[in-house]
Amino acid sequence: MLKRNQIVNAVIFVIRYFGGTKLGIAGLIHAYITASEDAIDNAELRSWLNKKRLLVTFPYKFAGKMKSIMQMILQK
Image 1: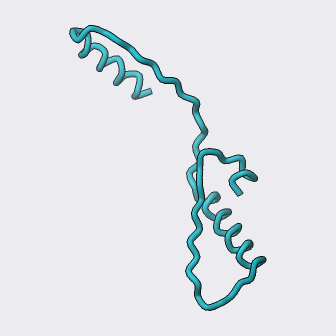
Image 2: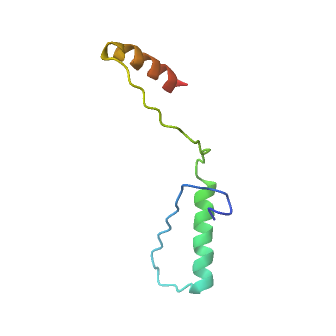
Image 3: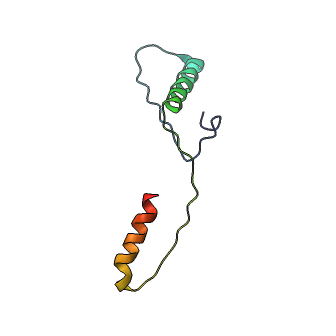
């Protein structure tokens, strides 16, 4: 279901408690597909963003200024 919906970096766990009814292979497949479809339909999907790491070195006296700059960047 994840491949069909082109969802990456995600996982779906389906936990089934045996209630006494044997579903057989086809029934289990149908149950797991239905559960995963419901999970995807009710999920809040977000676009995948490629991010880069950046190492910035600066003198300690600029720490306050850098903190202000980073807070402004992160708020966007």
